Length: 146
Image (tube, rainbow, N blue to C red):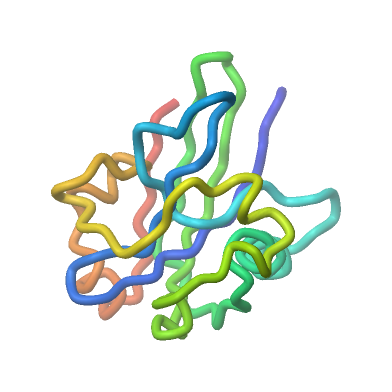
């Protein structure tokens, strides 16, 4: 089985999440996504999230609670298992200098705080969950699209 494990950060402020539009080939993705990415071999979820977020934003995340787990299969049949953590140092993401990152200028076309109910934000569950309530509740929600 071909499975990729990813870890992502949820940075929440006043009804909005910090998200980015990634560069895809010769264009920009038509959707927003949370920062993060795939784990390296033998890398822990937390270590992978710290590495990915520093690569993309230049900011070291303060990792809070696990909020969501999503399992899905892409259009090529590869399975993904994603872990979404609350990032608590929100203010550090107000201004990002992509030039100071190792991957930001290469991978990120645009970033900012967006309302996931008004923008196309992936994964889709972010468009319908109550993130503030989920942060307070401390109970992990699972989404399975296999």
